Amino acid sequence: MRTLGIKRQWNIALHDDQRVQQLATGLGIPPIVAQLLVLRGQDTVEKAEVYLKPSLEHLSDPFLLTDMDVAVARITKARDEQEHVLVFGDYDVDGISGTALLVNGLKRFGLEHVTYNMPKRLTEGYGLAPEHVDAALQDGVSLIVTVDNGIAAQEAATHARSQGLDLIVTDHHTIEHGLPEALAVINPQREPEDYVGRYLCGAGVAFKLSTALNGSPNDLDIAALGTVADIVPLQDENRVIVSLGLRHMAKHQRNGIATLAKVAGINIASVSSGDIGYQIGPRINAAGRLNNGLAALQLILSECPIQAKEMAEFLDQANTERRAIERGIYDEAVEELEACFNHKQRGIVLAREGWHPGVIGIVASKLQGKYQRPVVVIAVDEEGVGRGSARSNGNFDMVKAFRSCKEHLVKFGGHRSAAGLTITMDNITSFREQFEAEARGQLGTGEILSELAVDAIASFSEIDAGLLKAIEMIEPLGHHNPAPVFCALGVETVQRSIRILKDQHLKISFQQNGFSLSAIGFNMAERYYTEDLSGAVDIAFTPQFNHWRGETTIQLLLKDIRPAAK
Image (cartoon, rainbow, N blue to C red; front, top):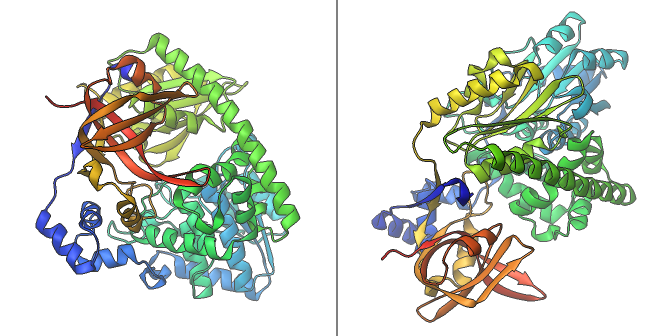
């Protein structure tokens, strides 16, 4: 990243010491935790109490969502008349978990004939299509309920209506082309900006429908799974779902999830949002990325230990295969960029035949992190049709950019920071040019800075087990509630401690005023070779417990290093 001239700007937060102290006193918590709460907008005792101690009472009424009453009435009719209902989900963690949750919720409500399905990523693409409607009709389905898709299924919805098949859409994606012709469309994007659940994920919307049907929330662990994995803001309703869901997951240890956690080396009794994001979620995603997510869905629903073990091992193997494919594409992408990269360009669009469309989203995310620019990675098939995945950070609106490029695209959809598209090979060059123009318009032409938000300056003498335990109060961590980042100024490098791990990670120790702490910098090995680390430096880091061979120590997870100010 440094070879491209990208600088990292530290934004050290300012603090209102009086407000911090008032909050600390009012809640009886350490000032450092109060400081973190204030920075996250929890600046009163009332707000902070909800934030720190979420409960079922903090979940909003599901009937606040538009069309919820219509959906409940139609599903009640389906139950009373013993209709065949199909739940049609998506193939990522959010769609898979949401589908499992709603299948359980419909059965709990009393429906006896509930089936489920989802598209095959490689051959059918995303979302409900007319052919899925035809297949449902042949199976005797009279009602389809989508999960995490459907808002853009205009053609399928119109076809279903023409055939007399009712459709309920539950989705959370941006409404780009108006509402589909469905009986009910439940999507928090339809609600006012101040709606507490506006940023629910697909599983979260399914959770609200299940709650509306059954009168009380159920399957919070499954809802938490989708919420964490879909990287929606862990604020308001989402934070309540994840906080309660993680407790439910640890206590009740659902057969399928617990079995997968064991295969992944996770202790389900102390499961965290990080475990879901980095270990459990990718394994659930793996099957859908490589072809079909039904195996992961069946695992979540499974009550048979033998079946669950077989499926969990299959998903673990699929994840290993996914990582290998992803690494190969990433290396090819970096090689291409290093050969032809223009420092002045603001966007990156890469396309190649033979790339696997199921993993390009992960590749795009990694490239965005490395080059600090919006990235679109397109996998082109043998017929010249490209499927693309795009990623950006919060200062670039990907959907807005695609909207400006729509004349070059077959279709597109998604969120501000993550989106997808379909394009023909003939239009890739013109799309790349238009996308670059849009990137320049949104980002300007000045120096690219990678910003690092720092919560506070901390000295090594403050960093102990008590501090780390206190910081745990703000968990679960995730999008819009990141792990705290501190900085220490003028620390000395312990030269003899420096090691390079696996040719990519930097292991190092620092000293400050008689206190010494070890640190790990993932993918920061190049800093050892390109920068002088021998003098006094400033470091940005997240402190954490490191559990290794039965011993627990404090370790700093490095975010950045810079020469100390003179």
